[in-house]
Image (cartoon, rainbow, N blue to C red):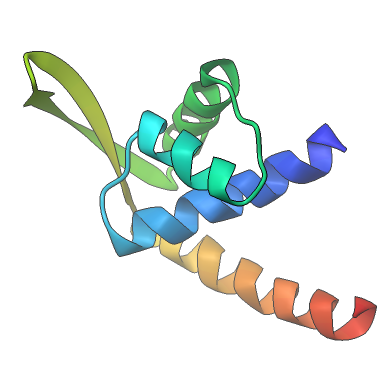
Length: 96
């Protein structure tokens, strides 16, 4: 099941990064609201892979004396999100 959920998590990350800049701890909390138990050992590598692959870009900001890395969606990430949402709709229509 973990592999299926990792795909859902990536889509969820792109969805939120499309709305506003996100960071790892925020996404862990957001995903927990949807029943996903995501550890730092999962969320941060996932964010790094999405950035490495060009779907997100990061910017560091000083927050409370600590550096926090915020992630923003890129044009490539927006294209992937749009295409994925279309595929999700098709799948939901067929399966449900």
